[in-house]
Length: 241
Picture 1 (cartoon, rainbow, N blue to C red):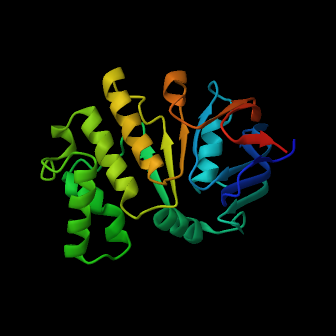
Picture 2 (tube, rainbow, N blue to C red):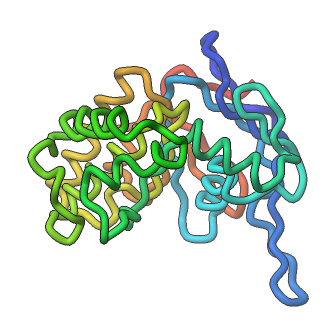
């Protein structure tokens, strides 16, 4: 399969070339990705869809530097990072990627402000500057009155807003959202997706995994996977080459 590329002149932030991921389970080898070729442009909004076992979560883990390819290349911002070690991948995650998870992944003992500040702590930010930035981000997601609360005192939608603010803390090049509405009711899901759409319109690049078609419709482009391969692409301005 030839690479899927943008018809625009936008920079490619992520590119997978002949991407294979094979897991060894006892004596069995299971192919999770069977030779993927795809590019994602800076400033785009993608939804990756597919049934359980289709490879969508594996692709997300590869793009998020949480796993490595067995064969093939992963180019991030034009640089091949396929052979990077754990420390280098951790550095990319911290400095360039923002993560939003279905289960929120907030630290229960920390306040909203401290949860938002967490990536900045690892980057060595000054405490006063970090706190001010966290307050700005909380205001962006309409949680400025919840800064002293802990996750247990928040609704599901509020917790996901905290997670979004935390994902934006380092001004990442790419936001990865893994089933961001999976634990939310329909009204709250709509609010979260409208919030992500706002940040996309402001220039953020978002790649989202979802199994919900109505959630995927918020994305510019939809990628459907089956058996570790790309089955179909739908969207604006993208085509096979």
